[in-house]
Amino acid sequence: MIELTKENGSGYRFRVTSESGHILLNSILFSDAIMAKNVAKELPIIIAAQNVFERKTNHEGKFLFNLKNTNAEIIGQSQLYSSEAGMENGIKNLKTRIDTIDTLKEL
Image (tube, rainbow, N blue to C red; front, side, top):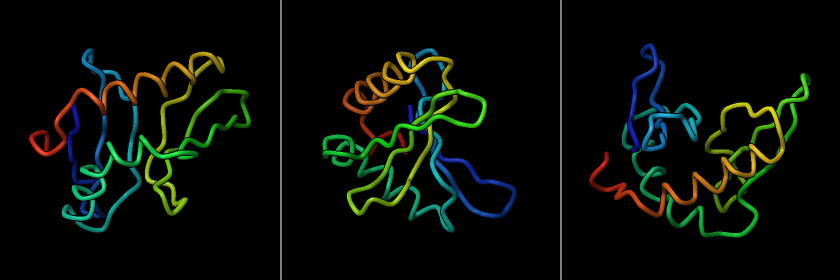
């Protein structure tokens, strides 16, 4: 599921969740709803591109990934994972989820 939320009057972000409700990706903050929706609608194209996942480790040794658009701009971030394998599984789950939902109907 992709849901659009308003963040305390400061902007909008979209969230991609698994069928069980776990957050797979939180977008960056967008200034308006139309911009957030347009980026969300491009997710199938973005996910299919090369080198859009930036894998990282935070200062506590937890793993996460950023999703970048085709211009190498960060558009979203994952939750924290306790292992590298968990992070890779999160990327796989996000790709699968984007392939199985209709972003045009979701938003």
